[in-house]
Structure formats: structure tokens, C-alpha cells
Image (tube, rainbow, N blue to C red; front, side):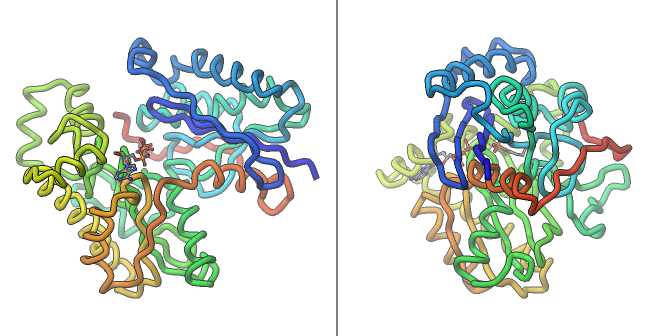
Length: 365
Ligand SMILES: Nc1ncnc2c1ncn2[C@@H]1O[C@H](COP(=O)(O)OP(=O)(O)O)[C@@H](O)[C@H]1O
Ligand SMILES: CCCC(=O)OP(=O)(O)O
């Protein structure tokens, strides 16, 4: 069975590549870009040629040629609400990501890059896929109600990693299928989101502007303070403030939690307080999501870069272990999750879906 798969994960300042044969990681690379490399492009999609060129150069250096891949899979971006699992990349999807993304985000390039690489380096049958995109929506209807009739809560978060780590912990630690497990997972890195998984469905999700803050995102903010600011600043300034200059960046001018932790260790009281607040907000969000499951929780998981931090993880555990066992999966399992998803399609365990743009109202930021 031919299953040579390339996973592509475009991030804000990097593109991660990983090449798998039969689920085994053979090669990986993180192509990193400077602020200046990226800053000259008006939109994420304008970065396509630059990123594609860099990917092509690296693949060529690795002796990859036309016919090297049986499938190429990218991190799925900000499409309107979609199902979990695999989607085949087609023109309708690319058109939507180019012209009508729900949000500007590097992951919007995943589908287009996967298609370009599949054409240049794939076999004749090689298809491009995305898997578990950022906007997978399995939310219960009750969770969609925001409190304002014109505003609907949306399922937008780190779905690829959250679903992958839930499956991993269910199988490896709880010894039961994901489809029979009740789990809460918080992803905290550059961005943050948290979700609740009931018997294999992600029935509620706290997005990166609703609850916990992260290294760069503000999380939820008091509206009484935010509304006046919106009249003093532009839409772009407000978006940057909450999405790029929020969280640790706002307090310390760095998105590197290790630097802040070092400050705290050296006696900086403000650094200690803000890190404590970060753990407090992660725990509070987990507590909130426990109510969705009426407290019947099999496991709590924290993942993302902040799950490497002893300081944060011990505080989160102290506040949440009364609910259920707490597990930490530092970093992310996205590259493997992408490849496994594409492989399931190649071996016929899963059928790739076709994206259909429907008339649900998208929030465009
Ligand atoms: N050992 C560690 N201790 C504390 N923080 C860490 C550690 N390793 C990584 N981090 C933090 O994780 C954050 C990056 O998280 P990550 O999930 O990789 O973000 P993203 O993928 O969104 O860029 C950075 O702030 C980094 O400082
Ligand atoms: C927009 C939700 C996905 C997300 O925040 O990803 P990053 O943390 O990688 O920016």
C-alpha cells in the first residue's frame, strides 16, 4: 500500500513540514520566517508564492521529485463551519479561503499549499486534503446562544490538536475509545482555546477571544472597558491588541513564556502574578466546561507550548484535579494527526468530504 504523505502546517511565522511513510515520521522541517519576511504582505494569501517557493526548495534538497507523495495534507483554515475529519481540497474551498475566510489566519494557506505541493511533487493520483480544520463545528445548539440575538457563538479553535490529544489520552490512559469518553481539553500556546468532548463529539468550545488568555491573545475582556476603546482605535488596532498584542505580550512585551517564568523565578512579583492568573483562567475555563458534562468527566487535558511549563501545569492541576484526572500533552500532535487523517482516507477507513459553502453567517474580522 502506497502511503507516502506530506503534512503541511502554516503558522504565523513558520511553515512546518513532516513526511511520513506508513505512519512513520521520516523527515521533518520547520521553515521559519522573520517579521520582515512576512510584514511586507498585505494578506495571508499573498504569502503563497513565497511560502511555496521555500517549501519547494526544501523538498528538492531532500531529493523529492514529481511522484514522491501519495497524498499531501494541510492544516485546514477558517472556512465556514465544517464537519470533523478529512476534506478534499478543491477550487470552491480555495476560493472561499482566498476571498471569504471567517478570519485572517496562517492556516488559511494550508489547503492551497497542499494543492500546489500535490501537483508539483505528487503521483498522478495524488490528492490534497485538509483535516480537522479550525472551524469544525459539533456544538450543541444550547451552546450557540451568546446572550445577544444578533451574535451567535462559533466553534473556532485548535481543533486538530485538541481532537488528536483527546483520542491519544482516551486510548493510552483511559483505555477506552474516544467515542465513549467525556473529556475536557485546553490548548494554550500562541493562541488558546478549550473544548469539551462528549462521546467523540466536541459539543462546546471556548474560543481564543472568550475565556483564557494566552501568550499573544487577550481571551475574554470586560466589554464595558472594550467598547470605549473601539471608538479611540481602528478595527485593525483593536484586532491586533486582542489577537497579537494581548496576553503575555501585553504585560511583558514578549510571547515567550520561558522569559516570563524566569522573571518570576528571579523574584519579579508582576511576572508571578500574571502567570498565576494565566493558570487561574485555564482552570476556570476547565471548571466551566465541566458543567457541560454535569461533572461526569473522565479526564482533563492541557496541551500546547504552555503545557511544558511546570509553573503553570502544577497550578492548573491543583485547581482542577478534584474534577477528574489531569493529563498534560506538551506541544502539539498536529503533524502526526494530519498524516494519520490522510492515511485513513488512503486506506479506505475514512471517506474525504467535499466542502460546500452554505449560507451560515460568517464573522469576518
Ligand atoms: N519548557 C517551557 N516552559 C515554559 N514555556 C514554554 C516551554 N516551552 C515552550 N514554552 C512556551 O510555549 C509558547 C509557544 O507555544 P506553542 O503552542 O508552540 O505556540 P504556537 O504553536 O501557537 O506558536 C511560548 O510562549 C513558549 O515560551
Ligand atoms: C484561530 C484559532 C486557531 C489558532 O488560534 O491558531 P494559532 O494559535 O496557531 O494562531
